[in-house]
Length: 298
Image (tube, rainbow, N blue to C red; front, side, top):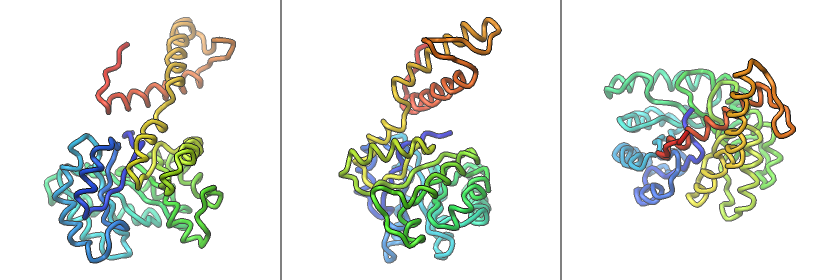
């Protein structure tokens, strides 16, 4: 899986904001053609997005474009502008079900062929942000091999549910948990909803910890000051990495090499599931290190 700890959204018609965004080290930048762009600026934003896609990826970030939902009748124009060399993928909004995803996959294949790109190279990230979208989340995530990630959109979800968006987020509990489970079941990355009160650093840290326990691997970010904390907090804890390295070594030397399936290490039972968990932690850290260009010394 790709590393998507921080997914920073930038208005597609704001070159200055894009230039600033490049300095924050986000894993992915999403150039927006939807909510961050007013109606009269849509055409200009499309032109600017196409021109700036390679620039957006110049510091190593994946480059995505968020397009308007199918129901707006603007999606085709957005896709025509966005699909070109340098694009990682399309972020589709208001995903209601598998049909929305399959329609996008079909259109992407057309545009890949038209633009001389490898068929299947453009990935899809879903924005699941309505009641029907949540109910159909697994089917949507599994609808195409292009789907790489799914974002839970809390703001539009609470609006659709006609409930108040609160800092405690109790009104989001079911949907937030279900989207994470659906994404995991489909083998795609679950990305958490944006944290709007960007000055509340303590609340942000708590919210990330809560989301990680639900299975989220990163999040949608609308203010660049939150990127650094996301990159740090969605990475494995250094103590866990150290523990995982110890478990891998001792289990391979004392269990696997001697034909055993379990050992005792530091007064705790270490069996195959514990070993597998350690390997997962090390693999996650290795992916992050590779992204950052850090060589791993054995």
